[in-house]
Image (spheres, one colour):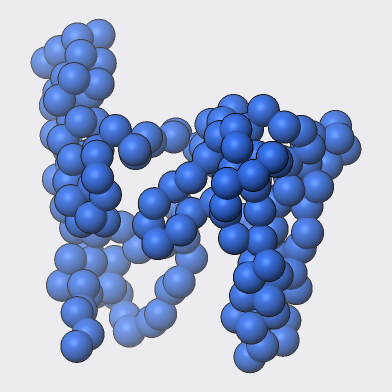
Length: 175
């Protein structure tokens, strides 16, 4: 059974029938984001600096709780939001005491993530293995072959991984 989410993206998809699979700011935004941005503007105008209390005490906890329910996570506290790729990656790396961290990536990552990984390699803080995205037909198999031997398990070398929607990170975890 397939669930279609198209009706939630009518403003973006109304311009034509196309497929867009990018997972960053260039992807289609859901219709609700239009109303949310309008509400954010109104909240900022009304609350000025007080808007941050609303955001951090109400909006973000509600969003975390909603996502935790949708992802069937044990706690909304397992989720955090980052404003950009740099902050997101630094949050992940801050969980890891052992350096350099091992990272499995591709040669087709978003430019800000690729740039940051290259800088971490130069600084000796990351060992990056990149799987070529082409040929596309065999990408899934080639990527899976690189991840199978290194499942996130208890051990001596910490790493970050995501297993079945549950994040695991911190000392004692290894590939």
